[in-house]
Image (cartoon, rainbow, N blue to C red):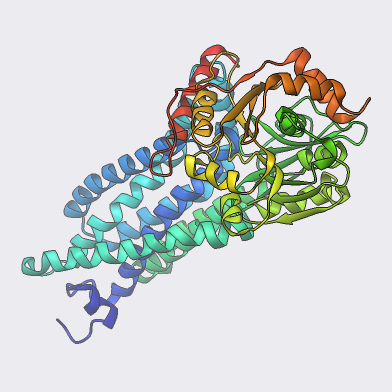
Length: 534
């Protein structure tokens, strides 16, 4: 190993040729930044697509599969190009083009995403094909060029065939270290601080800036000038075309949008109602209407769980836990249905909780304590026992798998009062109840009494689990005897009139912590919804 190589180069095993030794730090840097950018952009791409198509397993399959395909093509082409023209200036030109292509992605993504969403919205599994087209158009060029980097640098650094393996190992080691940085930097730092679009710009800026330094160092200012002018032109286009918005409102008027560590969030205004939409916006997660309390949606039905108990006493319902507080729609209704009730609301996304207080009247809910953490982790730690435990935790379109298993429902059971009710909101289509069947069968492993209530205006079913004697006849009796004109009586009467109340199905698959394929079952429901045109 030559004495003038850097300590980092010696540790990584590089054996530089005479022509590349002077620019060795640039080659090292481009390997690291290229690895960081490829993974960082892949992760950021999921956040770019999520507001339009969500982040289901379909989307991730498209994103990961196509990224690997583009990189594989780049490795193949990059090796051939490097053998024919082993010129570091060419490499830096290609990485500069990759960076510029990355910088343009947030700008051109909006019209492409909107067109793909519109073009495929009436086609079966439209989100799958729409996101496929989007990723093909947006990421093919930069990801393929990223694949050029490793074989190109290896070709430049190999001076002696006897050290080829050592050199290749060093390149892949440094690229992998860059990929590790790219796995954490966007998710933990950049996206929460500056948003998805600026994350793309930062990663692109690092790559373009380093590439321009390489071109300037190798070719001089005169030959670097066209690349600098092109970079300035792209930067100007971005400044002019990027209006700072992420996507149009799903419905109504957009009054606020932001990105958190977990979600793309829209606050919408539709007449008197304020709505909370997350990610692709195909579901509303909270509704606030100062002129009325009920919504006709699943939030109303969390109040009904205790009515199935044979010895139900409305005045005895004194405590509730809501896993998935969101904007607090269910909390407001519980506070009115059971005056004086003490509510613990658990919400994993602190940004959503903050918006609940700002836009959704969450601060007006009496006796509410908000906890920013995972719902299951909260149950693992708390000593509290509740009359109602409501589970409404969707990372659209999925219920987190850890909230659907036998072990989770055992934990819920251990935190219920003797007559307490566990109530979980589960999605379906007009005809596809397979997810209802599997969650109900899982609950039946824990609760001897399980009931299903179909929601009036939404494609949701509320599953209620209880330990003490309960029945549908008891529900009817208690609904009729509820306080005249009260909220519980009103919602129960509406459920009896328009909904289907039945025993929860049994005999289906049972989810455990070891095996809970909630994504698979949910994806089947999504496919059925697309087929039905829901």
